[in-house]
Image 1 (tube, rainbow, N blue to C red):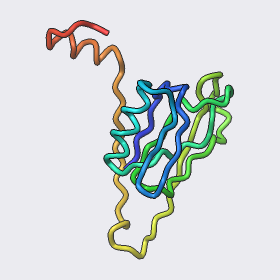
Image 2 (cartoon, rainbow, N blue to C red):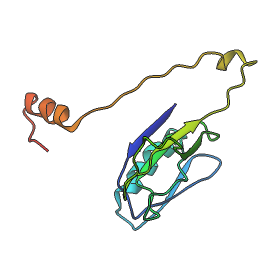
Image 3 (cartoon, rainbow, N blue to C red):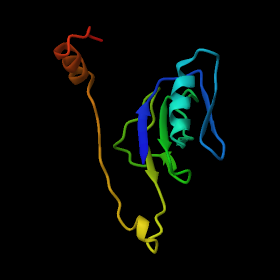
Length: 126
């Protein structure tokens, strides 16, 4: 399983140990909570491709340490100052019966939809 996201945590320096994700940042930074949540799940931060300012805003968390994230090679993906297009790959051992099936699910929530859901539930809007 892997989770791509635009986390916008510019003060964080991400690392991994054998158990999961580590973060180095100022005390009280939201990156601490993100790291603790993914570390609890034994996820690793796999993105080693910084943006044009050498900052990691887009992160890829996965329970597979060998997930390979690289800068996208397709010229149709336009890069910006804050974000770089990424692609990922993972080697599957097709002789192992546990990895002969690959399941892909895409989840994308648009802020307008989130605001609508909050409005329906009586919560203040974002």
